Length: 66
Image (cartoon, rainbow, N blue to C red):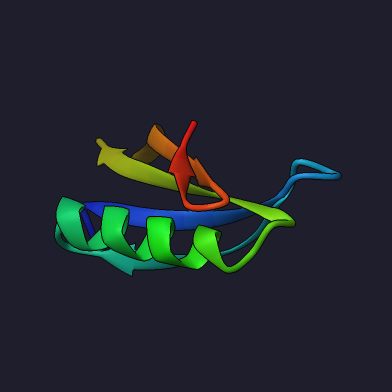
């Protein structure tokens, strides 16, 4: 099971579109920041696995941490 994931969230409807799994926090943050820089319609949320439940630790919009 992956420790981190980046969830792509539609800003208009605030619903999850898809997600990508990561084992490393820095890789997940780097991916979220870069993807959000070129996508102004979605939020990229970095989430950490806590006992099988993913909880938000950071969010990026337009390449900036929210």
